[in-house]
Amino acid sequence: MSSVGEQLRVAREGRGLGVSEVANATNIKSDYIRAMEGGDWEAFSAPVYIKGFVRTYATHLKLDAAAVVEALQAELRAGPGGGRPPALAGTRQGALDWVMLQASRVPLTVLFPVILGLAVLGALYIGARVWRSSAPAAAKPSPTLSPGLYQRQRPVAPAALPVPTNAPVAEPRPRR
Image 1: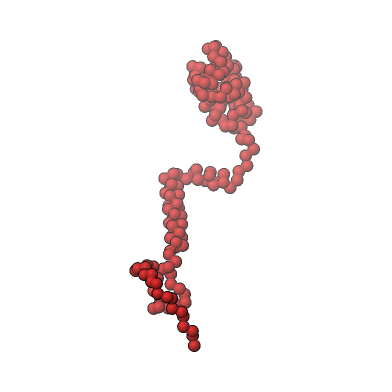
Image 2: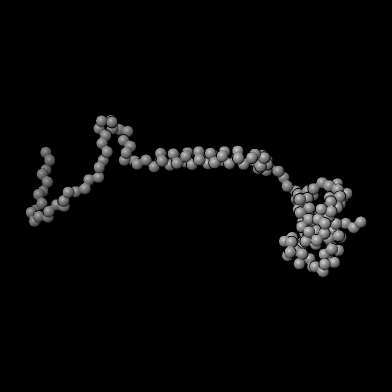
């Protein structure tokens, strides 16, 4: 029995289709189509992509997609990896990866209200800090005045301008 890649290539050539035509019709990159036909399963980052692309490709070629996917799974199990998914390119897991994994396990009906509540509390805290720091300086009494002596200063506007006169200016009296 031929491999899945050979079955796909023979079916494509039997229909007289080129790789670029299949790529345009299925929205699968031509590099992936060549990798599938060559049996190069390491070109894919996860088994879900392999199965999905093979199913789409087989459906486009009017093959029995379920039978082709079963043959693919058997081929992957018999391969050198023993059915294990191909390793992702040297990824190291950090603290953010762990947090995101834990967050993905929490249902959105729980996670969304918690995040919304934290955002509201943060906005209230920032608003209170801004409100306290922007209080007018004139409303704050001087620390040297007692509460009975303090009066808020009102802006003084002159009632009228002084009338100019031709009278000589009086000289100041000498102090004794």
